[in-house]
Length: 132
Image (cartoon, rainbow, N blue to C red; front, side, top):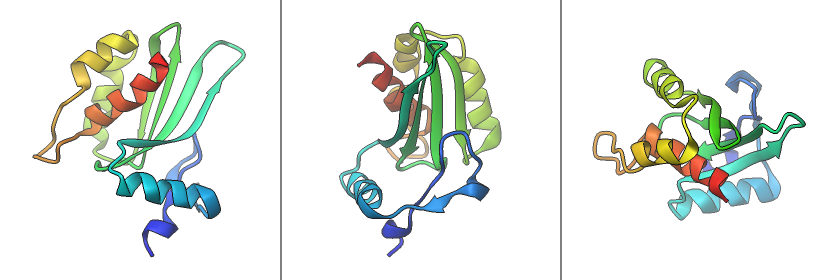
């Protein structure tokens, strides 16, 4: 089925290099999408420079992946893979340099065309992971 053939993009790679996921990862993606989870974390690591990067697969929006880097509670970089390039680039630039909590306050709950979510709303779900 399509759910079992979900292609996840490795953090920092472009979609042309995406590979189908099998085993437990495919099952967790399928379960998350069925439970209406906002995102599934694909990668979460902190570099020697203190920058924490989280890559996540969002559900209910056009982008296939959201990559966020944060240092000292400040957003360093946001990258959307897929979606509307102009809008996602604008959101990324607007939140870069912002404190995580301030970005969440501004983005959470934004709706796109009656979907009940949006790219900014799903970005806020990823940003909430940095508060844990």
